[in-house]
Length: 171
Image (tube, rainbow, N blue to C red; front, side):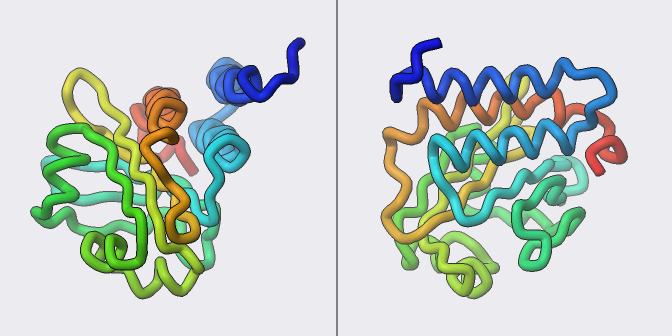
């Protein structure tokens, strides 16, 4: 196998894809593989996966890399905002570049900033025109750039089978 920097992201994508196929694996194992791939290729201090219930207008955290700060199964209402319109309604990714973007976008900005995170990459997971959830990566200020989107959006779509699994299967 070629170990050049170009082949490294493909190797991580392959690991995620293989996590779907292993018998007895549950969605949480897929989310862990996504976390590892995101950390290795994109970098993050915090990684979460949210599942959205459009009808109940709720977001539920089904994976977190920092359960003390962001507990598993935490939920919050989805309120109308520019972020909701962009990410949930149009299925477009969002990049928060600095602390001002974090403060303007996220209600839990104080907690995010307290973790040393001042940039975010929110990647929608879409199926047939509907956003089912997001992969959320947070890091130091100025970390995420448009160049992260190509790999990130592929990674997000690899979350689709796990997000479509019954909610109880994730934990």
